Length: 235
Ligand SMILES: [Zn+2]
Ligand SMILES: [Zn+2]
Image (cartoon, rainbow, N blue to C red; front, side, top):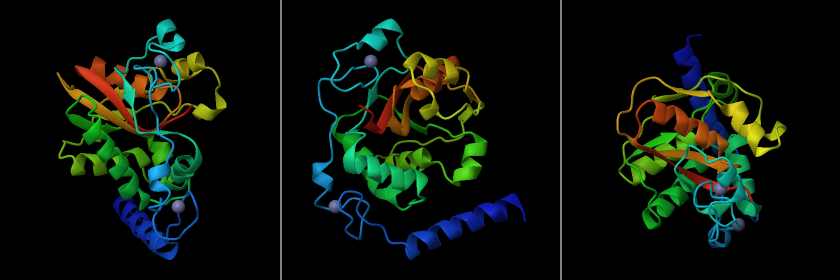
């Protein structure tokens, strides 16, 4: 079977699965949306104080980690803390194949960006390594980024940046320094991006090291700025 046919089949199967297993609320289990109208307003929000660079909640700015080793990303912003129902929602979206959730989660990003504009003019998703992409069948960040770009009428590009190193999963490593070192040189640009002001979209940030590694590659290729826009920040 050709690669294109395989990809088409995977798309069809994905949509069919979404229909077979209707979504239930990640907060209360009610059938319908991934987040029901009751749970939606009660999601755990990321509020001040937080580190203006890496977004670490509850920290002064710069936080002690950013003071010790600043990230390459200009700043990380996002609406939620990665806990409770938003944690369950992202988990369903990312690992349980609930692709249809991209619309609702992408809209949460789009509303956030309208209320708290993150600087930048081009939307890019954090890319997966080709091996990860084959395994998962979709890049959850690209689905979010595409939805956000469409709703907010911003250009979208998912071909410039690529992940070239398939390093071990972030959960296996502990310290922030280790994460930064593991990810350095993991991303590369396929072309130059002179003067581009980029908004990088990801579902979750843990330390900001992934976004920082992406920003380094983009700035090496001429980008003037790279900000991170995420759905949820780990505490
Ligand atoms: Zn609910
Ligand atoms: Zn920080």
